[in-house]
Image (tube, rainbow, N blue to C red; front, side, top):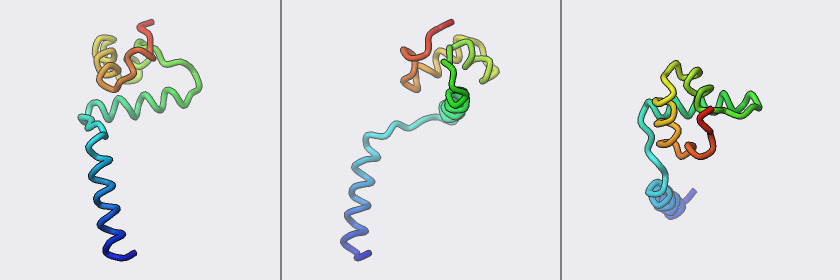
Length: 76
């Protein structure tokens, strides 16, 4: 890789990073748990996410909203 290739990659990364969300540790944990639940092949409701998180439904609802998944996971 030449120096100009490295510079181009760095510029590309900086540009992409502007559009990437930054998640808190709680959001990261919730995202990991959500992915594990989704991998089971069944719909993940807010109640199911809450059980997996060990948290109340309203906490799971708030985390789902911050992760951008609120409309996908119904409150059942």
